[in-house]
Amino acid sequence: MLRRMTLPLCRVAWLCALLVSPVLGTATELNLYSARKESLIRPLLDQFTRQTGITVNMLSAEGASLLKRLHIEAQRSPADVLLTVDLGQLTRALDAGLLQAVRSEVLEQRIPPEYRDAAGHWYGLSLRARVIIYNRTLQDAPPADYLQLAEPGLRVCMRSSNNVYNQSLVAALLGRYGQERTTAWLQGLVANFVRPPQGGDRDQIRAVAAGVCDLAVVNSYYLGAMLNASTDRDVQAARSVALQWPERDVHVNLGGAAVVRYAPHVEAAIALLEFLVGDVAQRWLTEQNFEYPVVEHIAPAATLQAWGTFVPDTKALATLGQYQAPALLLMDHAGWR
Ligand code: FE
Image (cartoon, rainbow, N blue to C red; front, side, top):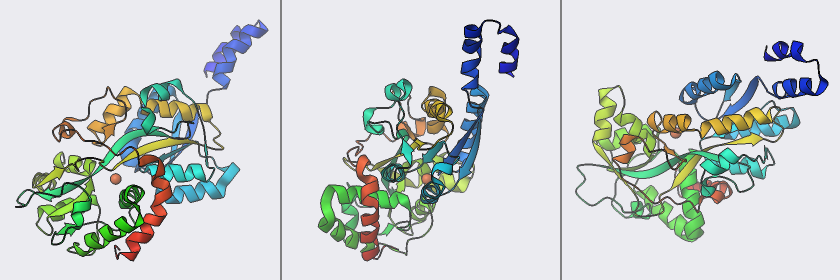
């Protein structure tokens, strides 16, 4: 519509080109492959559409299936942006040649270097911490780090090893401690499982609250969401547990995004990434999803601030993708189903 309105003004060729070209270069839609659940990101995307006029078509699936799909579609893929809940998936996509490097002053200024690829292949949008939780009635001091979860006699609940969050946690430990120590740790940990791995992170919180087990490992935003839930049951369960930050090297992951190698709408894709690290989106991600903002001047939601601060293990981020497959093998060998 804008283009048609400007055309009658175009009597001088260069002026005409100037008026029309930015409009011609602007996409009206964008295709997003998302490992984030649609309900958790749609309100933000709608805001982006209102702001830019760019409609976002979304395909949601698990990260691994999205990667497979990008691989099969190759040059024919309509995908512009890949959005994941785990950095390992982004670095695997990069290794498979599925991403392209993009540069943006906004992204470089707003995202600290440790939370983005130096060449611009992927950008972190939010920080997610995987923490130890324990029942508040626990008599003994809770484990001071992940390794202590393997000490004999503890009662631990865990979700299954096919979950990417646990694969990334073990990948980070494998990168730091090596195979032998990680294998021994896994054996001790699995011996402490009070029930076969089952359910999601919220179910681990409920199980600890109910006394099924004393300890579990969950992403902190699930605890944040349950503390602020509309159902009394979830609020009560969340209040019955406490969060234990490992002393140092807290396992963190990134919700992140990247521009796909053959993206038909690169400019629009960059615009979406920039929007997602803007103040509005960063605030939304922490206030609604209880994740930690990657942009330093945005304060975490009040619930998160009440938990205090922590020291994230940013070193492990770049190699999560590389260690996920070997981590899963070790988990399997240790009997973590
Ligand atoms: Fe999650």
